[in-house]
Length: 236
Image 1 (cartoon, rainbow, N blue to C red):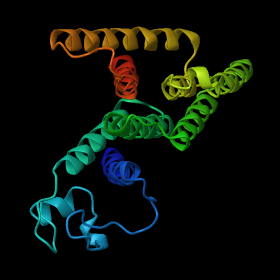
Image 2 (image 1 turned 90 degrees about the vertical axis):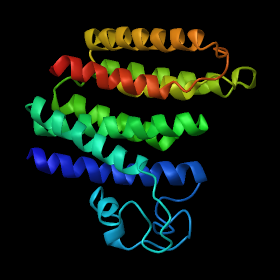
Image 3 (image 1 turned 30 degrees about the vertical axis):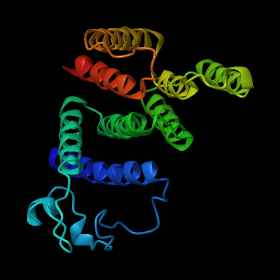
């Protein structure tokens, strides 16, 4: 089962690479088919096997022989290892799968946020669905918490639409709201402590490096790192 989770993790990361690449280019993830970024040739199915195709092609495109960035394979390998760890440490395989999918989705969102400072509503929506499903199967689903979350969401939407505060980063708040569905109060408090610690460390590093901390900083990577840290600390 651990091997199956590893393979699934690599496959999901491979799809995540497509979502990231197409999202940055503002292209559909369905059409056109996967192609080489250098020569534009449409790739065959055997060119798209996670990790294996990179090794068999010696890290080069089969058509133009241009080097393929190793970052795609690194993401696939790391994601596969994360799925393996979750499979081994979490007793309920369905829970392990949901948490693994959430981690993949958050990492994809984090990379897009770093590159574009954009957060897509569809990804937040999928995250909320996964969080609800997690709460349902772990019997942590709370009707009143869901109602509160929905009311808060639409309240924030109304506030966001006000022209005077349109520049606020509401996407980060919506991601936190989606995760709030999954946590009970104690867990969410622990998550926020980790979030605060990691945010403080990053802010300190920015000060040390003398970078402008007033500049817009992608926050989804910090949320992602905090979410993964919370579960790894809890399970280890």
